[in-house]
Image (cartoon, rainbow, N blue to C red; front, side):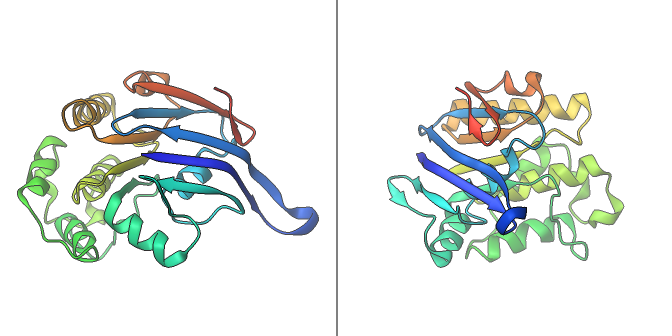
Length: 217
């Protein structure tokens, strides 16, 4: 499903440049659920941004389903819209739109229409009552669950999640993780999840650890 080879990424220039990824390799098979753990600042979120094709590596290659996808901005955008779902820590919900409108506009930019799956996701995540509500009238945890609905509405081939349980209480954390596990088990959804939580990582099929811009195992 996904292969990343010798990924390097830095921020800044010259002597002030900060090396974040320093030759990282990762292989994820179709239908795998992989958790990536590591201390703050080790490059986990940067890695997710690269795998989600939101930015390009300074060096290295990313292949999705046997095709290289990192080298061209137009290719990155097209692949990200069609085949990748991303749950970011900051959610990026449009403040002037309702929860449902946030999901529907995400589908529209992909050339898709709302299906029954959207309502099913709202129900499963316990946010059906928020469909007409704007983000400013939601709690942080509610906004996060709407972001999950939006990321999954187009049935992505690859789902990337950056600390998806970080703003949820224990009950909603359990509900979300169980849904991820069910998607992975029943629909062979490929998932890569960044997390600080050992309990969250335990639900994945494989856990890898990062330190200083590389995977340890």
